[in-house]
Amino acid sequence: MKKLLTLISMAIVVFPTMLLSQSGGKVSGTILNEEGSPLGGTNVFIVGSTYGSASDENGKYFILDVPVGTHSVRVDYIGYKSVTVKNVNISENLTTNLDFSLEVAALEGEAVEIIAERPIINTSATNTTRIIDKDIIQNIALRGIENLVALQTGAVSSGGQIYVRGSRSGDMAYYVDGVYTVNPFTLSNTGMVSTNAMEQISFQSGGFDAQFGNSNGGVVNTTTRTGGEAVSMGVEFVTDLGAAASVDKDELHSYGYQLMSFDVGGPLGDKIRYFGSFERITMDDASPSVSYYPSIERAEGDSAAGAAAESVEATVLVDFTSDSTSIIYSDYKRLYGPKDNAGLTRDLMTGNIVFDMGTIKVKAGGSFTKKNSRGDLGESMTMSQGDYPYTYTLLNSANTPWYESATKSGYANFTLRLGSTSFAKINLSYYNYAREYGDNRHK
Image 1 (tube, helix red, strand yellow):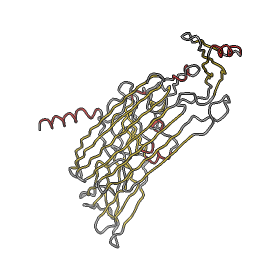
Image 2 (tube, helix red, strand yellow; image 1 turned 180 degrees about the vertical axis):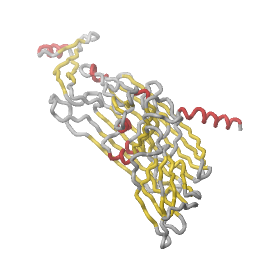
Image 3 (cartoon, one colour; image 1 turned 90 degrees about the horizontal axis):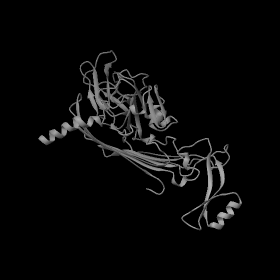
Image 4 (cartoon, one colour; image 1 turned 120 degrees about the vertical axis):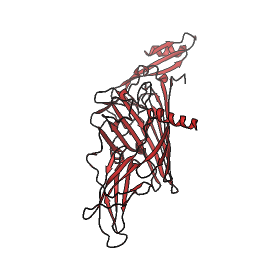
């Protein structure tokens, strides 16, 4: 028993610094009849889940720890029409107000369906909080957490980093499903999530709650999708168009961009929901530029070939370790388009599983990000910071530095519902970031 108490104490003291409690949202409101009198004892529940409550004698109700996302809320009371409100958006750590006015049912089983409207301002937000939900994420012509957050007031993005109200990029705090994903050495974000796997992004640019730390600029928490009531799948493929590198700067050039994404989610029986997502992005040149880059042909030959090359004004370097080897450089050009050995490959994997038994709920999940790049000197796990070393392009492109970065994170949440008005939660998390680099001969 002593060991158990010690473990729990460590979880309470240590884990909050690494894991933002995966709190859901709160739904509250008042239920009245047509005359405006409160209806006590009305059943209110989230459709397709075990979350629910009953109104008190004043008609007031609230449901705690509702998962982030879009839900339908239903109200039932004997002798009155059942009312279902669809498209109710639940935001993390915020309250969604939902009032009901029930009509007397002339026939048993009568029901009313309402489509909820998005409020312009969430009055429960006590700080500068902006919510980017799935509808916006899926329909806007941008990808990546940084690009989406940069659209918000007071935030700008540069080189894969976010700057809020003049602060440094290292002043930001990033979370994925509550797990703190900031590189402790460079203070950059290492937790990437596929756009198709995002449920909601919560961005706070000031007035942080006491649970947040390690941030003087802003806090970004990305919540991933979970499985729904029915199996759903999504597939996406994107590619660019154009020609290979050439001397024509006005030609349309392809930089080899390709994106492949797949996600699937749904139920496993009545109590288990799952979701998984995979995305791969490849580029032949991760640092595109409208400017030219120098190029020259390189070949090796014997002394006779070297002499012949010199006669046509080619540059010949003699290998002094051998009496017969010459390195011949010729055909200097200024090329536009993709550079040699300047590409990258980035894989994103995200998944979770939810086991809901009503009183006890367990959610476990994690994400994995891996990026292999050539010439991308920065440590950002986004696409590229545009810092390709052009000193390699002319004579040494084969040895352009390579970098391999990987992020692993995982979490497990255990929730015990103590009634409709309280619950207890234990959160565990794991985070690991690794990076290796070298050149074409040292891997």
